[in-house]
Amino acid sequence: MSDLAKKALNIGDLRQMAKRRLTKSLFDFCDKGSEDQIAMRDNRAALDSIKIMPRTPRDVSQRDPAITLFGKKHDLPLLIGPTGPAGFVWYRGETALARAAARANIPFTLASTSNTAMEQVIENGGGTQWFQLYVWRNPEAAFVTVQRALDAGFRALVVTVDSPVYNNREVDVRNGLVFPPRVTPKAMVDGLLHPRWLFGTAGRYFLSEGRLPAFTNIHIPDEETEEATGYVSASSGSFLNRNASLDWDYVTRLREMWPRTLLIKGILHPDDAVAAVKHGADGIFVSNHAGNVNDTAITPWDALPAIVEAVGGKTKIIADSGVRRGSDILKGLALGADAIAIGRATLYGVGAAGEAGARRALDILDAEIRRTMAVMGVTDVAAITRDHIRLPSELPISGTQQQ
Ligand SMILES: Cc1cc2nc3c(=O)[nH]c(=O)nc-3n(C[C@H](O)[C@H](O)[C@H](O)COP(=O)(O)O)c2cc1C
Image (tube, rainbow, N blue to C red; front, side):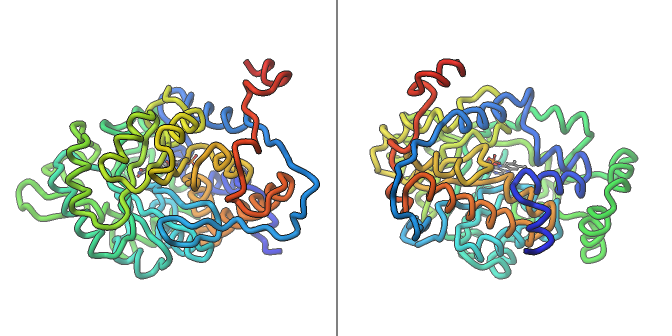
């Protein structure tokens, strides 16, 4: 057993390790949601309230958690979703995540607000890679990014539609966190208190590039020179200005220019799921963005049953938000999702120990999935049905207590 495996028995342990290594402001950025953290708590409460109904005795000596998604076989019913700060928590953290995903044979999604150039992540990360898109103030600029992602070879485009405005992250305001990062006295103290991050990550960027990482995958034309720069300058305006007019017409334009798999991320209403199918999406992410955007949004787990019924198998459903255990993943599949995405689980891993930490996160979830399959009485994840779980309303005793 490796040292890391001894220290990190579960995702919660990786979270604690990341907390010790990262500056407070960076850790809080990864760990906390918006406003009062209600949606984050609800996500966990929803998953915890679902109970597994085991079928036994069954011969579960051979278990296979593999799935086929968009024509590719993956070894787990799982994928790594986009998380912007991967490259801030570890030097070239996006490549570390991509490599860990490739080793586990699951898809990795590169966030548009990542730092390592997308072409490098494709080349050095390997495996199946998807690209996530935010549409910024200038919607035409996003097409430049999409074309670049197409040329780079990403297999899927994930268009995030749940963030028309920047989220109300009071925790970051209190911590004085800004993007692009600025060296303030408060940030310097925070950095000096976390030397492993300061020298191992920030220092490595300064040594190799002479600056902290830029947003090299967003096309931000400088208003004076028209030149694309990963840096947000005063003249290019704040990249945090999301495009609040993003609608289905824009999705149609993206569909026209993206011949590969197109996914719409951040759907919670069944009618929007149906609209996504109508506008040519190959899949949707049923997600409340880990509670990062709309603090009183419904949880994806509460939203799933109606969405599954409404789309009737016409599109692939990926669900995320709050997953920390293998059992959460199997509960999501029992609710009707085709695959489950994770954000923080592997972000904690990479923040704790780079690629080794991300691998550890995936190994933990892999072992938990296989163990839960055994106690559930299934040998194949395709055999998991709605009958393998009970919702609080179906639990005559503990369900009443939870209400
Ligand atoms: C720190 C952080 C950054 C994120 N950045 C993005 C992003 O850039 N684009 C996006 O579509 N989703 C982003 N997400 C949302 C994730 O893709 C995903 O929906 C969510 O993290 C899943 O919940 P979980 O973290 O509890 O697993 C981010 C989430 C976190 C925690």
